Length: 259
Image 1 (spheres, rainbow, N blue to C red):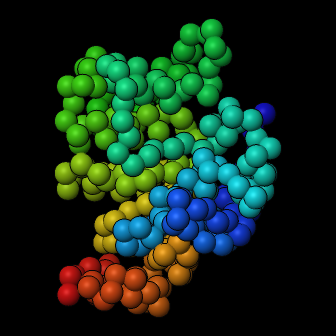
Image 2: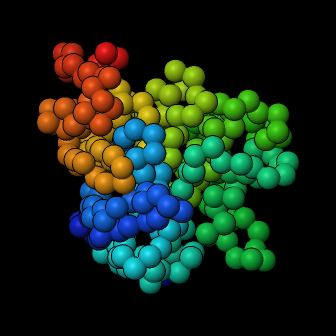
């Protein structure tokens, strides 16, 4: 049985460290992710962003503690965890040919028995997820026929079909053209407005500034974690990118320029 979300943090990790070979990808990180908000993780290449996201998802476990809605993630069954946390990895590889519909239906596996057929709720969730990414007309198309951007939209739909309380996406804007990048950001905002928690790893700082909170990483450590509107956080973003970018206020928004 899945735990009932409460008003506390969505995810909390305490003193997490992860070594990848000789590299310390995550270095003694303690972090709390607010429930019902959009948090973006940013930083230069090799900062440990993707590794931290995997720690938060429970995909990398260690002697540290990761709690989801105040429940130890290691105490949750695989199915309960899959219903609570929906995952979209970076540059995911799809093995074998299948239809778009069947790929998105994989997102419903946490709700199905090993021998049962998909339910009406499963079919509705798949069609609704495809509609959310404007791909409902592709149900019979082979995934192998899709362009990189089309495939990314279908993978986002698979994550949406889970209907989890927490959605984690590593570089969700990969291969998307500018209009569909904007659509993705609007979709994230709609999810948060419905009390979902969204955590993204983003290279696009201008897009990350639209999130509620930002976590800055550099060399495996969290440098700052604050509101995306915080000016001190903006200065720290500029610093970890060696001041090669500059964040300027522009009316009710911010613009990122390369120096």
